[in-house]
Length: 228
Image (tube, rainbow, N blue to C red; front, side, top):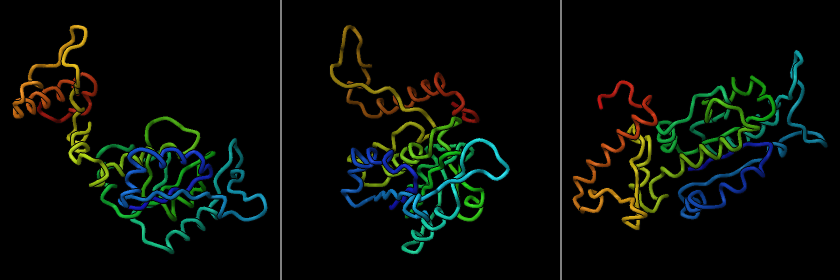
């Protein structure tokens, strides 16, 4: 998988992709993330990428021309399955969407900034609009990093234990069950006996029941329409 991220603040994305699982994915040749500075595609000495909104109002708007040049340049080198725009009014990102995107080959993610992009960008280039929640960030960079992380970790071979991603919260519509490690007892707090029993079938039953209980307590909305 290759993910190309277009941004006006590339420095915000230096850290997330140079460490941990995302770095491991690139080292293994399973995923590649490339960050593109939109100003490299802007004209004039000032490398301007934004301008005032027609009709007035506060805030600047990202111009269509630099974005078009960048996307066209990328598309001239390879085909892309999706051109994604990170925006507060997009479809809310979730695990189902992460699973779907992890099956794609190449993605472009455009990070919004200022008051957003010229609407013609959305009409001409964008195939999918994604939000990470009902709140506003200073730009789409952190949101793009969240999406990239959630998607790349699902690619087979990225995680050392491939079953790990399959047991994450939301994969089966439930929150993950409680987990424990050594010591088996700490200040009178004991690990549930079933987890120490070695009886795998009973352990799996306990984990499922614990997932249902936790979901009912913390996210009952996830259980709507389900018979648990």
